[in-house]
Image (cartoon, rainbow, N blue to C red; front, side, top):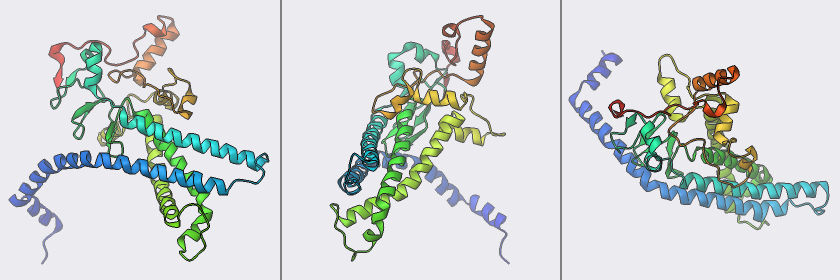
Amino acid sequence: MLPRPATLVRALTENPAVKWAAATAERVLPPLAAVCMRILGPILLVVACALIGACAWIFFAMLMPESRPDNVWSVAGLAWAAVYGAAALLVVDIFFNYWMAVRTTSYAEDVARDDEDAAMSAAKVCRRCNAPKPERCHHCSVCKRCVLKMDHHCPWLNNCVGHHNHRYFVVFLVYVSLACILFTCFSAPYAPDAFFPFAPWPHAVARDAFLFCFLVTTLLGLLLSGMAGWHVYLAVVRGETQLEWMENAEASPPATSEFNLGWRENLAVVLNTAARPWWYVLLPLPVPPVGNGFMYETAASRAIALRTLHRGDGDEASVPLRRGSSDVHLSEIIVA
């Protein structure tokens, strides 16, 4: 007679060898994964730039010239010129936002070094890196530092997505998804001939190079579109990071983000329309985030501020809208 599954599982979990293996894996695997991520990061940067550059080269060297109408002043010709210009701007925007997401860090210690008031507003100190640890801040095991408003560590950026580069990361995902869709649509008519090696191929780009980029953009377009939609949903609809979503989903009952101001305000925070016009997102221009990453506006603080303004008790400049704006006494600091 075979043992019951529950009995078998209990016997395995209580086995000393199994316990030792689980404890060893829990102790060894995270540092090993962090080392692998640090080694893999620069390689993935080169791969990402090479893929984007190769697809852009095929698009402008083959797809666009071969789709050009004979009469460039016709409606079709003007539409072709508009697509050409939009695609060129899209490529520039992709490389710009990718570069900014790679180069822009969100380390708490950097902000605290330049802003003493921000450092004093943090109620926690990280036990690993001794940096101030305000709300929405997490320690990254790969970067070995605390990251403000940390979303996740992205190996394709070789950097953490946090307060200062979150906008660039989301915009990059949206634009590279649109570029993959555009490339796939323009290259689809050439795909049947590319798949058959005996079919004629009178084009400026080698068949294998075209076929490789076509498959990559088609598959990545589906994957990146889902990722872009997910991150836009988190940032705009829910007003939270990926780590906060995981924490809120594990709560009992599931919690909602206190930093959710509504989709319009969340979008304004992501794009920082208070500092720059919304159309800056269409151009390769740097845009700073809202605040320094130590203090964030919450739905409750906004509601109190709006009630105060409606009663006429103060003006917008005098109403505290952000958490953690007051200094924290040394006796209240928590090591976490």
